[in-house]
Image (cartoon, protein in one colour):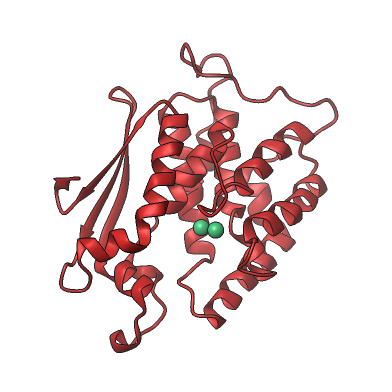
Length: 251
Ligand SMILES: [Fe+2]
Ligand SMILES: [Fe+2]
């Protein structure tokens, strides 16, 4: 789904969209504005900080963490919640959390999820978002890194799976393969990645096509094991099983 579709696909009411067993999203707060993904994207601070976060991470040798990553994670988080039957507002909060989750990297890579949550509070309040909704978004952002994060709400669980799904050749900035570190090598090896959501089977399957000449499957797991364990916990939070498929083989 495109970002535009994520912004537009919001026609269902809280109760229409919610199947049995799926909790409703937050109640609207009196006096607060319904802040949409388009409003967040248009905020000057959001644009400035995501741009700086990507530039500063580039300075210290990290893969791409800019608007491409932000938009992709936003779309995937929206899709996960939408397809699993969560109401439209919860899905849009997933899209907003996905777009903002790595913004704190412009302050420091270390603890960027916590720093980012603090900055996000100010920006969302500036836009007039209700406290209850801000709390959901901040809980998601503050828990998206594997070192200390845990799925604490459906938005956060979707954000974890969406963020960890973005492993791809296009994220590598280093042009010379002889200068690749293990993260560059593994990202560069992935020529296709896709998170398949099967609402009936209750599975979230991360499908990768890997060029095994660039990086072996074992190398992939060497750096991604902790992320995949986090994805499993996040999928379980969403009442799903997490599966990985590499080059057409289920692992
Ligand atoms: Fe992050
Ligand atoms: Fe990220």
